[in-house]
Image (tube, rainbow over all chains, first blue to last red; front, side, top):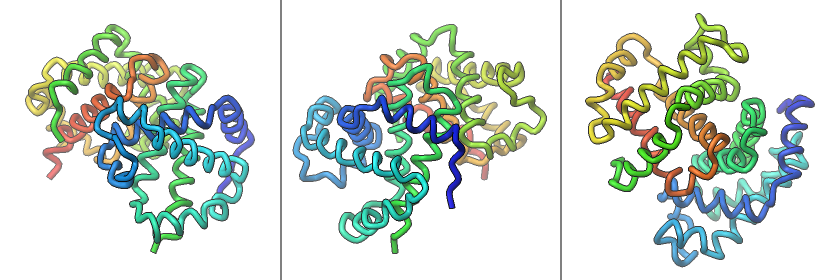
Length: 147
Length: 142
């Protein structure tokens, strides 16, 4: 059973309140595909991913990034039940999408960097620690139903 | 994983922009690492790890100095970091996973202090560089 302190919940909700899910999601997914290009293997039907510029401008990347981060928003509303929140998505990523869970950890790290760039000084060490904890737990929840 | 000419240019660009503040970036990265990944503190039982610790600042300066040295000899990382590689293999024996953790925190430090610097392309190059440094430092472990 995950424990969240009041301070951690505060750090999560206050950051999330100022995040544009569409912009942040698009940026995080684009950076994942640019920084770790092997992750492009899951998106062969996304069209042009041939350069950082192409990836950033790709409408399918933007749309999918928004989808992914919207799901993150659900996690934040259900911090005490991440397992339940991600149960169905975990099965999907294993059985249908065949995504190595390591990719969830990579995306989580990228998301933290995107938030850091957005919030600069306000993204304190305590804030980073809380968000790394959150992305780690989301990755864990998404991997939980793998078999 | 090989650093391309563009990667080297990007990394040199980052460190030239950071300039004299590299020490602060180093200390910031360490502080973030200790806060985010508490297990990393096990390598510093002899340190005061409290906020503003002079020892952490000093160590951050050391780490930053090594990165700057590596950047200045980016065509021969193994040569530039050879002594540090020996030190980590024989004396420090920091588990290899920890280099990735410090790398993540260094990227976050750059992102918070100089977000404009960390374009996706530069982010990719810097991440590769930090991985390469970690690889060299653990190359002689066994």
